[in-house]
Length: 345
Ligand code: SF4
Image 1 (cartoon, rainbow, N blue to C red):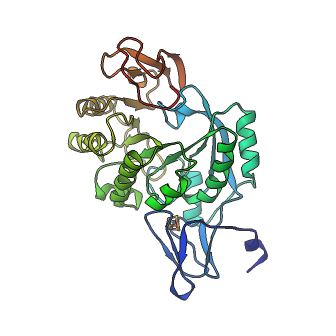
Image 2 (image 1 turned 60 degrees about the vertical axis):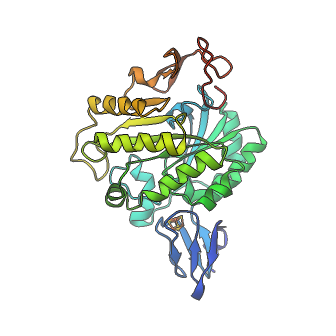
Image 3 (image 1 turned 180 degrees about the vertical axis):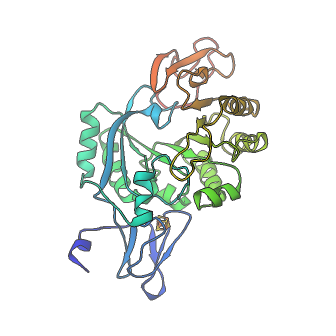
């Protein structure tokens, strides 16, 4: 083993295969990796029959963000979440909004970052008055080793841990994280295999399996985001399928964030999502029975607010990522006493 590689962090969730190959069990690509090769994410390498993380000590982003930016609207609203990332991803979305840090490792093996320890991350979170640590900007699943060490430490210090994820982790990975993972926002990007294959180089079904599992078999707080891309995933039929899936296979209390798309990265020949499409999606979500539907990237829209799904009372007033007022009393609507789902509302 070469000197540089001696300091690498041994990966979690893999098993040896024949001829010094390894099988990674972290995400649903389930790569079988030859000796001296990397997996599809390009940040996990087989060295002498052992899988290592190439990003454990390379933090490329660290910021105290409003938790509303993740977005999580029903989890410690109005607090800040110390948000970290390393480079890399297991998806290759043509419209990625963070492509500079998510795709560089895949495209040219670029892995930049600082050796910030879990202790330093937790200490920075506390110093910045954050109530949680968010593993975000890129896909946290592919830097699970850092999430795990940091998450356990954060928990000891009374902080919560949240993922902002594409939902492609395996059930084994969720089980691995569920002792310290408190909340997650999963992208449900579309409801067609063709969309996932063509635009993300991935599959839909594992994402659906993840959502079902988290909603029904864990205590992890779940919210879902769909980026509405004009002409790709914004038909009435597809939006109805997404909303009905959340209602029937997860829970009507799971907040659904419908986010406005702006042309990015390789997907430039499109207009931003028209406001009418977002409003149509909002209505479809509510008609399907979802209790909480939100429009994202539309600052000032009324649909950023939380309303009581029973009596319609405005409960949390928002302006972008800012909370203007929170009228929820003991997790209930102050007018009709309906329970409002969430964590530390
Ligand atoms: S995390 Fe996913 S893409 Fe990366 S090596 Fe493991 S199975 Fe492959």
